[in-house]
Image 1 (tube, one colour):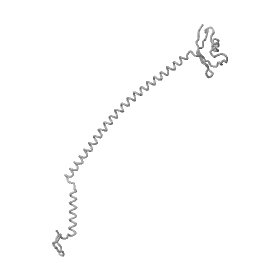
Image 2 (image 1 turned 90 degrees about the vertical axis):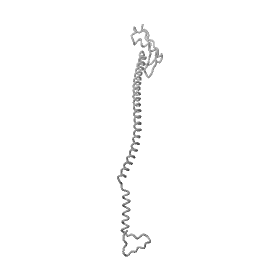
Image 3 (image 1 turned 45 degrees about the vertical axis):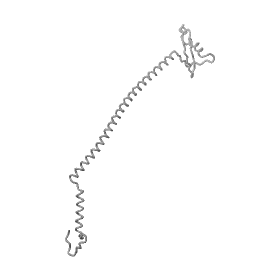
Image 4 (image 1 turned 60 degrees about the horizontal axis):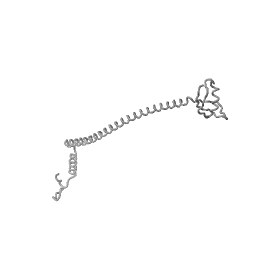
Length: 175
């Protein structure tokens, strides 16, 4: 404690009064103790570093497990994509084969249609008679048009008219 000043008396009844300098020193001391308590020491620093490392290891372990799960999902998705690509290629090939078959069938049907109509005769510009049926008119007209010696008789199986054209199915017998 500081010595008492000549004009002050100590009564002994309580703590002596402190001067403002002593109070300032006491406040500085308490602040220094507080600062020194908050200061990082080598032991405190190593403990903080170890805690930080442990927390980072835990976080990294979590991230590694997440990455492993994502890797497995990506691999499964790649397998599915590969299967879908193979299926798509197979479907594309089947479609191409079916298109080729359809084209071939279309050509065959067209050829059959043309062969079926091969013995048919299409006559244009012949006026339709009002009195006799078309087949009778044709049976009388065709031997005159063709060489009469080559064809003895022409028999028409059917005859019809459509839009100023007449369609006839004929069978010829040579005589």
